[in-house]
Image 1 (cartoon, rainbow, N blue to C red):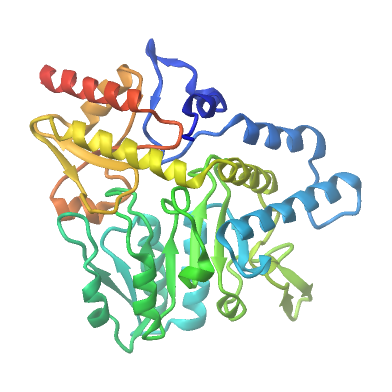
Image 2: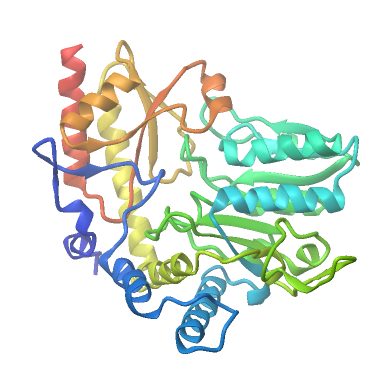
Length: 405
């Protein structure tokens, strides 16, 4: 039995509209996915009927919200197979998760002269926090490069790791190239030299089964809004052995045990890293989104998304002058490209006039742009609710627009 895409699409109200008089074709899923009605209803239920600040009061609304929030943590724990809920921290998204590790791990373990390895294909969110930390601590960034087909040169990792290396931070799936990196192998190579690994899973968790215990990663970060949930909510998984040793990222309510003017002691995990009132309705909605996607057959979703990518790639390669960036054998549903003689912004603007939403620009990946010697790219990215018919309409639109230029 295959996925009933029409039934799935019916769950997403935003898809059923016209843009500039054309049916909306939404191909900007790597930036943010749309939310099904089930997630919207769950969030509205708490906004309208059950809203109460968590962990702080004994009244009905607070108790019900606290219970739902902590149940959401358990749903996320199960989704990534973390060993315990204490290792699942709610954050505002992948960016905050990485900033948390860069700051707190850096404070605890990185000193002047130390090194952090990141890859050349990272999103800015897995570059800038490490640069900021290195500037504070007197440490240094070391870059693991990729080849022109978008494949990390993982054989260079062994020689890049030195006695000064303190952590490897690498993306699971490139947001610009679609490359699916061999995370398990990277983690194993790093662990053989006792180097912990942070994985940016913003593009990995939406498309692949994540088992953090099997991967043996030390940190894994991902966001709700790329997984059919709201913006402003994400998760950082961290092994307890690291989180216990890392100082808090933010100070305030909830992350404390006892406060005096002479000294403050900190709360137990995971609350030590959840200062202030969290986005609890977002967390509850995130859990609903996980429930929604896991109630579908993950192998069928993967097969469908692979078919979309294959279909789109084969069609776009028929367009003369179109260059696809990143053609690794293992790719997620992302195609970044340019058409000779057509500015990406012009292409994106004209596609929008035809009801087609794509991303244009530098894709928060300046080093990738520099690698290929381009200023900008056009990116189409796919999700479970996209169809082959939309791919064909996209191809037809590109052919028509190319002819215009």
